[in-house]
Amino acid sequence: MGKRRPHNLNGHSYEKGSRSAVGHRRPAATGPREPRALPSGGRSLQELTALLRDLFATWDESKILRLAMDHVAAAGPYTAEAGYLLEAGGDLVPSAGNRQDHALMMQSKVRDLGGRDGSVAVPGRRGGQALALRGIEGLHGYLVVTSRFPPTGTERFLLATLIRHTAAALSVAFVHRRRREEAVELHGLREERAALQRQLVTVVGELAYRQAVHGLTADVAASGGNEEAVTRALHGLTGLPALVEDRFGRLRSWAGPDRPDPYPEPDPVRQNALLNEAAREAGPTWIGGRLIALVRPHGEILGMLALVDPLGEADEHAVLALEQAVMSLAPELAHLRNQANVELRLHRELADDLLAGTDETSAYARSEAVGHDLHRTHYIVVVRWSDRVADDSFAQAVDRAAAAVGMRSLLTRGAEHVVLIADDRPHAGALYEALALDTGAPCGSIGVSARCDTPDDFPQHYQEVQRALEVLRHSRKRYGMTFFDQLGLYRILGPGNNLRELEAFVHEWLGKLIDYDAGNNSAMTETLARYFDCGGNYDETAASLSIHRSTLRYRLQRIREISGNDLANVEDRLNLQVATRVWKIVLGGSG
Image (cartoon, rainbow, N blue to C red; front, side):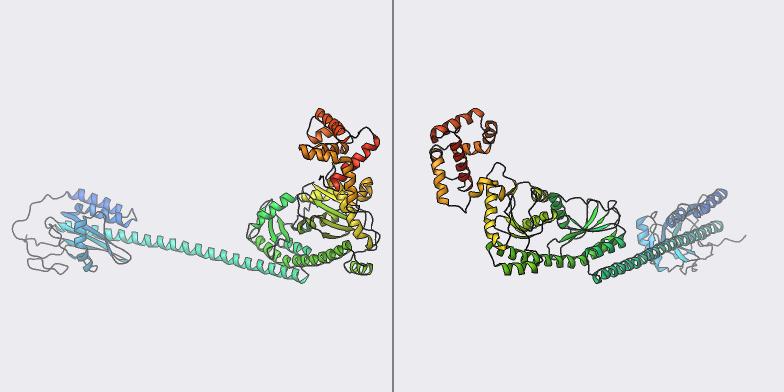
């Protein structure tokens, strides 16, 4: 046999001074070959066979490279110095199993090979080769190995086989990764397409709904925009019962099923709380099972439009419809409000002139112009509430209460009270009860004049009804309703009589008691007045004064002694009782 030539790692023979397969001249080996232990051929084949099976058992490219590096020694006297994987951007990334100093030092040299096999210098090693891992898809990376001594032909074959299978496994993993990425990308595109389709359907549906909303609101506007047209359109769009209430909570219109019958009377306190809560929101809001929107074109609340929605079924389309309906309803309510203000102003001007005194011809003509029949018999009604200022709000409450009990009237207001000129005698107590319910406070007084047959009667009877109201307010029963023609003796007590004579009468019968009270800081005069108000009943009088019965008896005895009058005497008793009423009502309880 001839002498065996040395070979490179890929199985090519080379001689001293010849070039390697990658174009580099390798110096011929000198001196004796280093001794080595040959691996068992059977064991190496078994290990490589298991490795090749493992290479294709995973789709992780980093793991494939690591397996090849870990088992390269099974092919011969080889050591895996470094491994690199080619990224999508074309950069070679060192394997996690590399020695970092070797990997960084060799990375640029391996990159310069441009996908070819070639020799590389490995610090402290010899025979370093960078073997390209090329597959069907192109270059996947590099494996850098060194050999402790020249390999045999079989060992070079085994290494080449390991490199080809590693490259093939990387190709499979690469294809799988690309398909997985494509599948993910395809899934994402499908999801995006589905989302765009859903969005398109939503947009088309919303545009169609908006068109329907604008169409119906245009029909509402064309038909006059009244409450019935608005609620019918809103119910048709949403399928929910729709309603309009005025700012006080009284129903003006309802469209849809389940309308309460009778509609509940509003609670003023709860209604104000509801309006305040709704006013804090910029748009419609759910309150008490209703989707509520306030009608307030210029900041003033004119009413409320609502959808009855106890299950919360209203969606953004229902909100849109409600907002459009409010815009349609606002001009109508504003017009009605302006019209009511004009009528109210004309009514007030006529009522003020009638109370102050005006000619009959002008009064009849003006009343006919505002739709009020002044030829009927009228009564003047004066209303005062202890906890309410006589402003426009209270005047509106009085007007509502009067309408609730069927009173047709002209309305005006003074500094402390509201005045109604009613075309019929009010029912005793009905107006007071309706107004107490509306305001939520039964602390008011209502006086009713005698009948007025002509406009000339109004000024005098206006003075009389104020006197009746003063009598009520200074009596034991301070609140309620009183009629001037039922005052009896008190009809002569008032501003229309001679005040000087009344003062003289009071001084004659009560002067000593009044002076005693002033000098001793006592309440003898008030005690006597309460005694007469209670009809001479000791228990009621003592209770009203919050004193004991024995204290009352002592005071009455002192009253007899101070005034010199006998309470058992019928004449003295009558004069004293009249004097106490004049003292309280006419003189205001003053000295």
